[in-house]
Image (cartoon, rainbow, N blue to C red):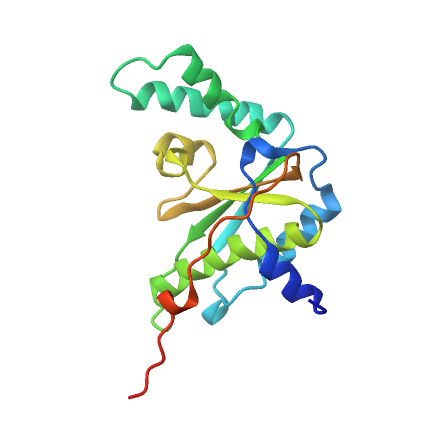
Length: 191
């Protein structure tokens, strides 16, 4: 494919977080990634999203919060294996960026449009990192919905995690997965 943008879009895929290693993006690259992530459809210029960058020791500290949230959320005490996994959750990639969806009341910008804009910011973030040569994984997992984790991240009332974007260098071979046939998902309305 001669067009590099189309080549990137037609070949991009998610990389499992466990296959994302060093190096991750540096400060200038992160700034570029976030600037591109914010260039999405945003009806009425509400910026219905924001970003929380997790790197270095901050990932360890948030892992402790996640382990404590796991203990509080489970009916039975979680095993040490489970708690160890939860503590290391954000260490699966060198950089993790939380995308926070934050809708604002506006008569001309329905909540649904604002939520979609946050999703578009997640995808643009992934695409920007991919264009820089990094692998990405957009996940929510249970932690995105846990109030304790949200409080630790400083989420305000009405804010939600749209995704945790894990970013790093792919350390393993990526297998292509089956994609839907266009004939199964496309119709042409003829009136």
